[in-house]
Amino acid sequence: MKQLSTIKIFGIAAVGYILFSSFKKANKKNLVGSTYIPQSNTPTGTEQVYSNVGTKIFDYNKNVIYTYDTANIGMTVTGLSSGVYSVVIGDSFMNGIAGFVNQEDVQTI
Image 1 (cartoon, rainbow, N blue to C red):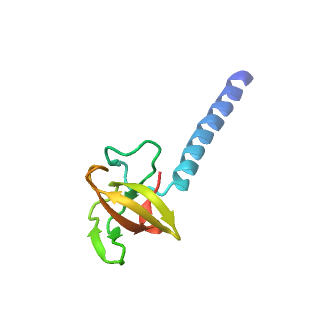
Image 2 (image 1 turned 45 degrees about the vertical axis):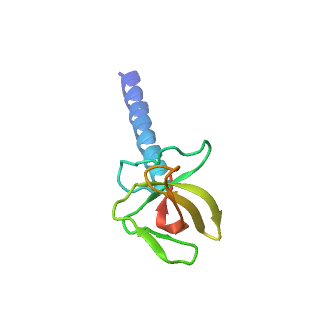
Image 3 (image 1 turned 120 degrees about the vertical axis):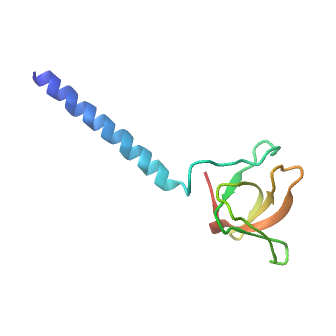
């Protein structure tokens, strides 16, 4: 009987650890929702960031060229400087539009 209660204690501890570690990992990510749509045709080794509702894409002169009305849409990062990502937006990297987005305005995985 003592062995059975020891097994239960270890089982509960294992389940608790798994739940805690999964929440801990989720908190490290900046995620909204659950479905992410990556950009197609991206070069190997490039990073993608994902939109939030209201994420604004700027041109070189800081004019807004696009505002996302949907979250979790992928953009390919082509550079990072002073908290601003250079990105390519659109369904396809090859046919996308180049722009800039503030680092704090996007989600990373």
